[in-house]
Length: 209
Image 1 (tube, rainbow, N blue to C red):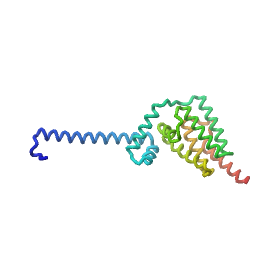
Image 2: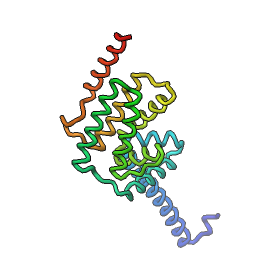
Image 3: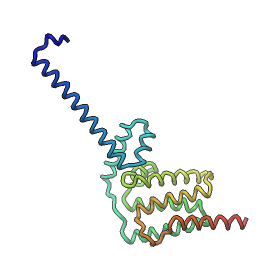
Image 4: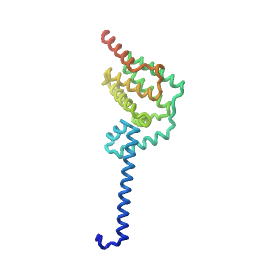
């Protein structure tokens, strides 16, 4: 294009079009940047995990946004006080069972978490779907849930050590406390007490053998 042959009106139109394109590009960039900031703040470590798993940031962000929209359409509720006390008592029983049967207690803890999620209104699909749903409102402890599930899978094939099973219980407990809202001093023992009991049980087993 020979610029010298253009009329002032044509040049003005070209300049305006270029300015508009630059403005649109800046708006899109600012929107995407803001979207990234909001999703990263909302999902925390789950954001980084999803981006790493998907491989493309834009695709991962689309999935996280769709996940958030899906969960917000669900009817998620808090537990009633009666339900809360019942689940806390059940968790205390499972936790105490760990001392004598670590593998069985981990299985029970996983099942109990499923019951709590269902009571709160989360659909009980496969594990990945449950973890994805939980991550919308509880992104940090979702990492605990994933870690505990990985250990539970190794337990099913006999490849999890007692120490790993203990870590699984602690991971499950983190999600349990956030979902149930365990008040201080009600039912569930602090993690340190649980670890002390498990350590004491391990020592007793070694002495007995």
